[in-house]
Image 1 (cartoon, rainbow, N blue to C red):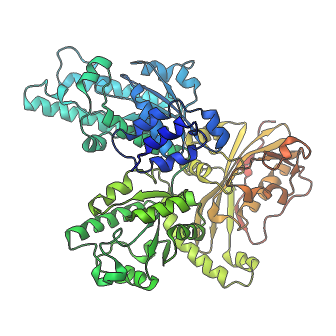
Image 2 (tube, one colour; image 1 turned 135 degrees about the horizontal axis):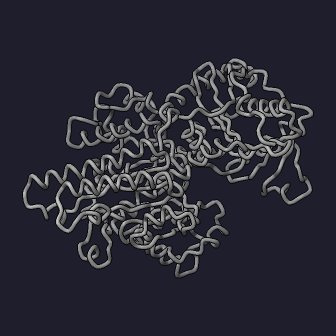
Image 3 (tube, helix red, strand yellow; image 1 turned 180 degrees about the vertical axis):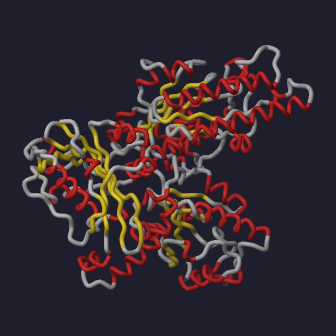
Amino acid sequence: MTKGPDRLRELRERGLLEKAYDRVPALLADEDGPGDAAAAGRLLAALDHDAVLGHHPHTPVVTVAVTGQSTVGHIVDPLRGELARHGMLLRAVVGEHGTYLRDLTDPAGELRAAAPDLTLCLLDAETLFSQVPAVWGPEDVERAGEEALDRCAALAAEAPGTLVLNTVPLPRSCSHQLLDHRSRARLGAVWREFNARLLRLTEFADRLVVIDLEPLVGEGGPVTDPRLARHAKVQLGAGLLAAYAREIGHLARAVRGRVRKCLVLDLDDTLWDGVLGEDGPDGVAAAGTLRGEAFGAFQKCVKQLASQGVLLAVSSKNDEGLVLEALASHPDLVLREPDFAAVNANWEPKDANLADIARTLDLAPDALVFADDSPAERAQVRLGAPEVAVVALDAEPALHVTRLLADGWFDTLRLTDEDRARPGEYRRRRERGALRAGSGSYEEFLRALEVSVGLGPPRPHEFARVSQLTLRSNQFNLIGVGYTEAELARRAADPGRLLLVARSADRFGDNGLVGAVLGSIAGEVLRLDGMWLSCRVLGRGVEQACLALLLARARELGLSAVGARYVPTARNHRARDFYPSCGFTPADPGGSEGSADGPVVFRHDLARLPQVPAHVRITETPGGGLADGPR
């Protein structure tokens, strides 16, 4: 079988690599060998980014600054390959050997000028041992660790973008320079305390991520190659760097809001051992046998993901009645029918089932991850539903957990209360659906839904959720971009800007923080710089209520107008008429900004204000959040 890097080489030789860049994720999907990402990265090194963006304008470009204690350039190739696996382009800026303190603190330096999305500072044993005397003991290493922690804490506040540090493996070549076991034990304790305190820095620094290398070392072999360490000052080996690059690929995806939301599972030989249609409910197992125990462990892992907000669904070629019976009563199962937001058990092609699940849950196909043990089914889904991420499970169920977690599809920078509540929210969707089915009209449904909306400033703990909302909202993202938590906090602190959030509830429960508005006041005009709303509440009058409150407040403050901008994307076309429907008119109807595929600038003169929809109850108004700002 032709491997992904071989296919990339063919495309490059034919001059088609830039044009076919949208095919790269599929070509590299199953490449997880120790050198696969680096090989792909080397082939992509000469890629013309402008040409790629000319063919695929929505391809995310992630700027990554790389620096560290020792030589760090070897990370670039595997990192480029890992980002390509996820449909992103890498723009790398690499610091010089041993200059990480200057790189991260010099306001005129190259790394700061690059305005990176991620700043990687690779730490290694030399971070500590370069600060100890020629003859040393555990107490010297402890002092060096204290100094390094102080430096890291300071860097977390100064570094550009999201700063990424890592725990430091203790090389045997260092520990075994101590001859007595008591001293080695003391050094091991000091070293682990350093790493533990480094990890705990993330509790106090919002823009800091620390990658724990211990799990990667446990699965990836030697920490370093002694020859490269001595002669090239490369302290971290190729295998460990490849594993680290994979983690950074997942992190880059999370920073860009490209986090998947729903895990769709096959059943036979995926969730349980056996074929339900042939063996019957009594013939399948997820406990009691060596193979069955592996499926049980897989179900426990899936349930753990669901407890943190991952939606679960089923796509199985089976009779629905048999599937529901098994999910309800089989004694081995950890997962039951209420754990799933959707259960599609039928004989339709799985790409069609996945599209149906996405529609049912009001998700885009690129929010889904599909796990199946059948190569034929996986191939059919990759062809028919290319936006869906595919997890290749194989005939060995003991590897199911490893393969499910390998690509970090659901990794996020920070878990919010809304994330954890997501499965419950989708159960309430069913209740809302039943109410809708029993209503004579949509207006009657909305009245019966008892929607409430509040619009006001974010609370200090809500910035993570607001960032997540701006990064993940696609259908109602009126400018097509999102902001990190740190960017939003800076904007909220700027007296010339405003940040408001919308909270909503209905008769079935609290929907939480569902919307955000970013704006500024210049002269006599309130300018709306961005507006976002969760797809969970679209069409219930929340967006109209929020804009009506904003316009009313602007007139109360004596402003003359409100300006807004809509930037079309591949996903927000449903929101194109939102501003006109609320009384806005194009500010330049005859200019280029009125074109069908370009940005449109709108203006409202505040003469005739839209009303809050009659079925919506207001619980909070923008008041203090939109005060007499600078004019």
